[in-house]
Image 1 (cartoon, rainbow, N blue to C red):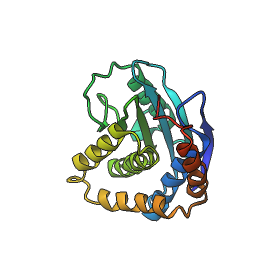
Image 2: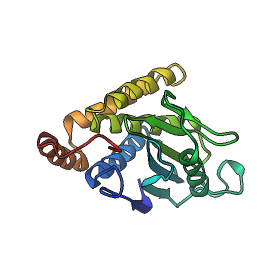
Image 3: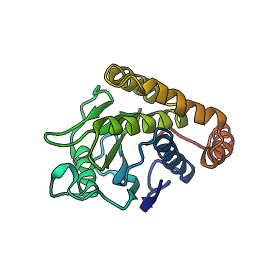
Length: 215
C-alpha cells in the first residue's frame, strides 16, 4: 500500500515511541492488504488525548495512494480535512467518566474510533474512497487490537478492547477473524516492524522503563 504525507509525533512529546508507531502503520497496511481492501485514495489519522486535557497528541497522519479523497462522502471537504475536523472536535469535547469505547460519530460525521485507556483515550479516523463503514470498522478494530497487544499492562485498555469487539461483532461477524489475524501477527513477530518492536519492548519493559499510555 502506498503511503504519502506521513507525519508522526513521538515520545517524549506524545505517548507513543517510534517502535510503536511503526507497528501501527505496519498492522494497518497488512490487514488492508490481507483482505484486499486497499483504497486508491484516503486518509488515516491517529490522535491521543490525556485525561483532563483537550490538546490532541497528533500521533500518526498519512494519506493513501493518490492522496486525500476529494469531496469525501460527496461533500466539499477532502478526507484529510474531515478527519482532522472530527478528531479535533473529539479532543475539545468534555468526556464523561465511564463512557465506553465505541465506533463513535458526531451529528452528520463519519465514524471514528474512540478507545479508552487508563490515563486517556485514542481516537482514529480512517476515511477513504467512498467511505464504506465496514472498511472503517475493520481498520478501527485492527488499530484497537494492535494497541491492546502493545499495552497489555493497561487493564482498562484490555477491557475496553474486549467491549469494543463484543459490541460490534453482531453487525460485523468477521471482526473476530480479524482479531485472530492481528494477534497472530504479534505472536509470530515476522513483520520487520513487529520484530523490532518486540526486541525493543521486552528489555525496556523488564527494566521498568515503560509506563502506561498517557501516563
